[in-house]
Amino acid sequence: MNIKLSQHLPKTHTQKILKKEAKSKDESCLVVLVDDKQNVFAKSALTEYADRIEQLIEVSHFKGKACETVADYALAGDKKTTKQNPVQLLLVGVGSVDKLSEAVLQKIAKTIYNSTQKRVASITVDLGDALEENQFSQFALNLLAASYRFDKYKSEQTTSVLTDIYMIADESLQPALDFVQSVFVGQSLTRDVANEPGNICFPAYMAEQAQALGKAYPDLLKVTVLGEDEMSALGMECFLAVAKGSTKEGKLVLMEYQGKSKFSAHTGATKEATSAAKVSGGLKALADKLPTNLPTKKTAKNTVKENVDNTQTSNDDAPIVLVGKGITFDSGGISIKPGAAMDEMKFDMGGAAAVLGTMKALCEARLPINVVGALACAENMPSGDATRPGDIVKAMNGKSVEILNTDAEGRLVLADTLCYVQRYAPSAIIDVATLTGACVVALGHVRSAVFSNDEDVLFALENASDQTGDLIWHMPMDDAYQSQLDSPIADMQNIGGKGAGAVTAACFLSRFVEEGQAWAHLDIAGTAWNSGAEKAATGRPVPLFMQYLKNRLNRA
Ligand SMILES: [Zn+2]
Image (cartoon, rainbow, N blue to C red; front, side):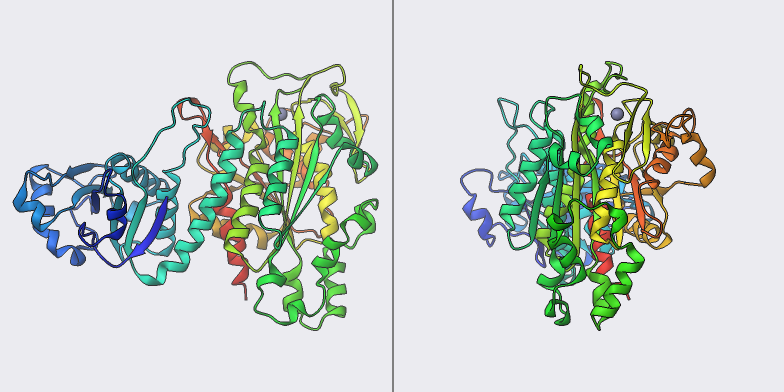
């Protein structure tokens, strides 16, 4: 799907794109948005259609309620009208302009797409200056996202004749539209990978997807895959406790995006290897060291100050690390799940899929920032080799964990991965996981939960949430919850009993993040996919991540 800004209303006899498509459906459709007071968006640009629009509103009793539609096909038989205005008109209601949230814009975008995709080759949506930049971006992303299909397993694919979307809006919105297109490309990869069934998408499949990206963007992305032997040598027993019940090998996939030195405007940034590049470049050399031997965030910053004169640049060089839970199928293991909707546990790699898609979006947007993506991939299955409830294992940081429930496995792969990624001396770590059913009970399918030990990271994520409409909600992580994880026999147990399940999961993860390391945890169990007839991955929170990363470039 192409999407472009335009300053012109559609005219079939001047539009080249339509001539190319002339053999099939060559019609164009002008989409006119109308609010619930029957005010027409960008009315001044529509003077040549004013009469037609007015008549259409009147004869159809059009109210302008959100997603209400009425079409005027301007049929060829109606010579007088078609000669003057040879395009189709589609009026779409937007409801109250004060209530144009992302959720409403999504519905309107879907309505526009579904009303036109089988009828016309191009649509022109006249927005004028009715939407501010964030709303414009949300609307454009949703128009693109409406065209997404995952029908590769159907013998008949759905076809659409709509190929081009023009948005009449100010030229200053071009950079925003470019960014949206990058986000869409990344989000589509997230949805593709997450929608794959569990008999295709194994940990190795995730690693292959990452390696394919590394090949597609060789100058930007370095991909390293650790297998079970390497993880075993690192002492990642928690991770391996999950993977061992499956015949498919667990994989820790590391994707290093180095946009800072590639695209930075600061000449100083490329003068010598930055601390982040040194750390990531030294990945193999450090591989057998425990993170306790490595600089914490604070000491890393101090080192940087001594070595490089431009401290502003240096702080920006420390990477953001995104960690994604990648359980390619979660049966629950020996603590096996009930059968109903168990198929949806193929989506339990939604966090890793979101990180993978974000890395692709970053490569497309070529943001001058350093980001490491870590995909913690394993399959959680019951077998003779599977972990038993009551088993005790040691995490990479030496802490012992009594595994009381093998279905609380996401936190186990994340625990070791969080230990591992601190070797990058990150400016922040954000993990994302379809972690707890308790989170779905708390927040449903509208907002993802966010937990954090750092106010700056939290504020920046909340800001990105407001801007994108990819919503999050701040949840507590008081120390008082920590005692729910006390074990009589080990340093901790992997479940916190009844009550506050999403919180105790976050508390568990916090024990693998060192003092002073900025960290946030997103629980996307309720937002990564839709259930039932609409069963499909949503691609969240790729928009949130991309906005967060983009905003970091503008920090004072
Ligand atoms: Zn589970």
